[in-house]
Image 1 (cartoon, helix red, strand yellow):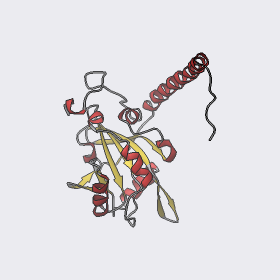
Image 2 (cartoon, rainbow, N blue to C red):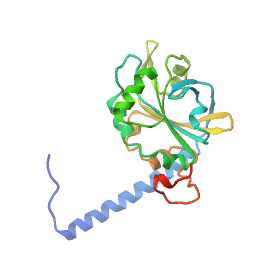
Image 3 (cartoon, one colour):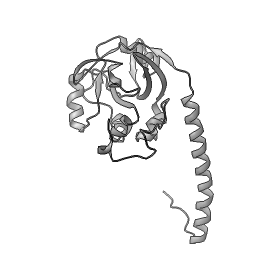
Length: 218
């Protein structure tokens, strides 16, 4: 690996200023793209898909926990695997305290195809406290995954694929608003990056500043 060129402080400042102009242009383009994403049309989905979690059976509507938005992490964990995907684990490690999402009307949940009895010990091993649900053994979730491309199907068998899907709730109606997969997850994880994928965006809960996670009122 070759190291950067060694220059004077003045040349470094000039080079940094030039790069800063490019970084600011990229930020403006990213903000414009996020605004365009929020204007995407949405499609209604069946809110009755059944999952299994720590409190037993739950529907897709239940995963919202009463909030208007839901972000789902499609974690690669096939029914026959003993442990979840290491790459998905690295992503989930980057998701911070959920209070920052919840204060902005957004719930976060993880969904995998593995039985909950396999998910539970792996989740404990990783020390995660995020809500995690199993879709096993329902065939309905396979239709769900086909619809939102969380899996690809080869010879009638689903192939695991990591992703994020976003949903919006209007009373008991659920709408799919956005999904991203594979390399599209690069750079995601912090609350603000996940909120940028949603319809409501970085909606503040009465203030435009972040707070300590124990100061939010859920």
